[in-house]
Length: 202
Image (cartoon, rainbow, N blue to C red):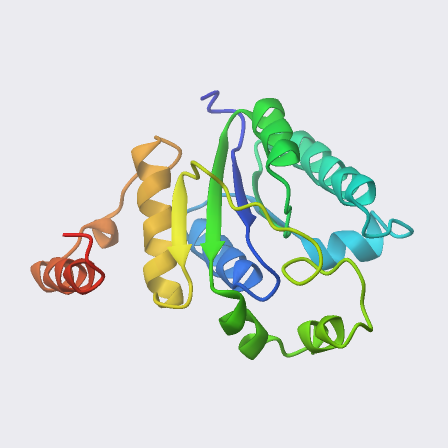
């Protein structure tokens, strides 16, 4: 990695899967570590950069192209960019990966039933009632990443646990330096081991 450049953490996941929450918490953590950070949130981009685009596949892809182009310009100038947009299609995410190169894909994995529970805006309810068309996860497909760098199971993990996973991956990739806080205590290691056992991973 060119140390004069930034890197991109690209969140993807269903609506209300926790992308924006994780993005903001990660931003706070990286700022604490001395990085310049910008968050490109899907709703904000829609309002200010992609106003006028609809929700057809072509318009969704164009929205993501605009996001990754802005991310490229920021990254080139030493900014760490965190994107938090649904970005439902694998092909366009691959385009972003190839252009940006310093790209860490984070999948906010959450069952649609849990996303519906969390949906404070009531968008799922409207989509299920037929009031909103082409809603991702209801009548428009979401293609989960096949090989993301990080999977955050946001229905099972706390925000802190998910952010720690992302930080550890950024350390592993050499994008950030570890601090004393990044070392797990014995107690934390036992908690993580127990959780992995309960989930059947070990």
